[in-house]
Image (tube, rainbow, N blue to C red; front, side, top):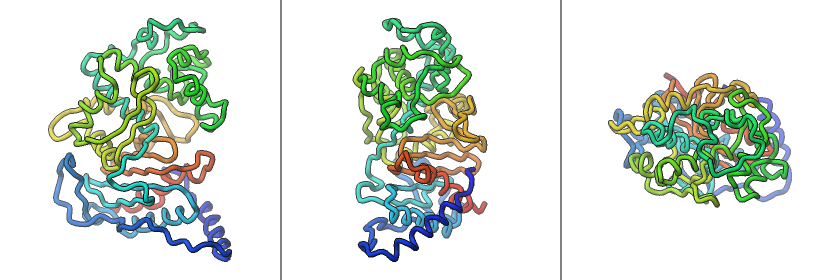
Length: 380
């Protein structure tokens, strides 16, 4: 699904050959300290509410050797001092590969998932919409903020909830255009401005709403505020009641913004196996253990190809989900947090890392590992 990175690995091989001749400390990492491959037989479908089951890769049609090579690749990254944390591969509901590469994290550790939070926000928003708390997605965004006297109001009454969900609001917002450490980054400016609502709504329009995708974490947070206004429950509480509790997720952390709303754009901390449960919920069309937690129509609509991103070839955006033209669906967060869902293969792949945003090779690594090892590991 991504172009080959063979030439990059040639550079790495040359680098490792050169550095092996230098006098430096021996590389003897304490981690990974466990076998990456799952064990046991495939015993048929089940719901991992209490716990995930594991099985040998071949039991669900995957090649163990390719998954071992992926692990070797990630250990090489550790040697290059790339901050890799974990990988989890699940097929047909069984864990076939799982590894942790840092003493800070294990399968029982909460991990900051950054903007994967947005996809959870979308799911909760969909439940609220289906239950009538929130009117149709064609409703004007500004209708939910009558208390705000919006600057530069021309054309902003055309921005709808659907535009907010698909990040086609049209606001001037430079988040992906600059590093998050750059003072020109609008998200950084917003956070330094206490994450206020007026800062978002007062931005001038530079595109007609609905026409151009532009990544905007501020607009994702407005979804959280709207949900809280309409339901009387904070986003984190609503998510716990309607999604996390039924999935058996009892431990999570979700910070609260200065305005009293849970951050709709980032901040959620989950265990890797629990984020994978959320992925399985979506692979099953919102169904969990005979209960429809999220409507099948919302799952389908929210993971549809609504707008071409433009900044990544073949990548579209749904309702706070990344959607590849080949039907890979992903929740993506800063630093290499990626929950990948591939319905065609009944496959869930989860990476947690802390990659350097200025290093293109690091940021491409999860996608490269998917293309180089995980997809080729599928035998049938």
